[in-house]
Length: 302
Image (cartoon, rainbow, N blue to C red; front, top):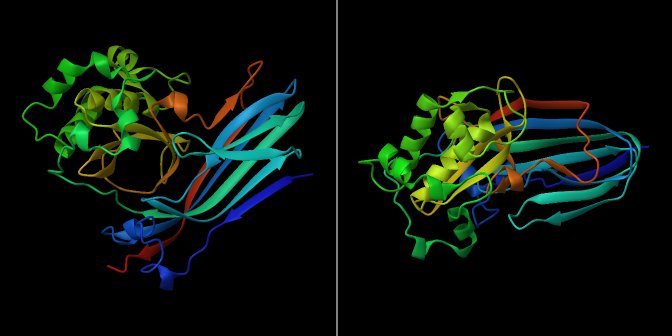
């Protein structure tokens, strides 16, 4: 039988201007442009030889750039699942898969913007003024060796105003310098490795962008999730930088600032945001299907 879990958070259009005063939804409806109602789904199938513990990260959460209208989480066969929130605020599910075929299927209806927010000239935030929760995104990490890129970052961002303009220049440098090759690597590459190799997948380009930002004392983090109309369609990774008092999206794999992003997890680098971690003898998906479709475009009330 199916192990069926369902979470729903619904809001009607008349409540958009009064709900979530802290900004979760208001940040969306106040963004210029339109709101996209997307349907996301991910299906993973494994062949399990021995009872295998998993920690999954497959549930998106509502936040400043997205609102989860409803979602569904299916597992086959029936196994107990427990949820916790990790140190980065991600919703994680832990379980033990039993021998045989094990399937996970998730889906969500998500409101997000059709264009990402930009802030040319946005100010650098001094380290002494950063929120405590942001400080960890300044430090070198396993795949983002920011202590190795100080001179290089200064050279790339020379003559740019500290803050948003520096990050945008780094993002453009990545687009012009590092070849984006989807499907070319399944193991994460560090910033040092991708800089030497000069090519990689979305996650790898993001690692280098993060390392360059952190070397300029700009907090940066990796984001994993979905992107509407991504080709080829698969789970995607990009990075965010903290400037002008908030997080902004940067994606060196995309030529425009179009939106349609749905975040599943945030972390220092790929070690923190794996959509699944499995413990014991290695198992790999025998099937992985990802889909993002547009259900409706809603005009912004602005």
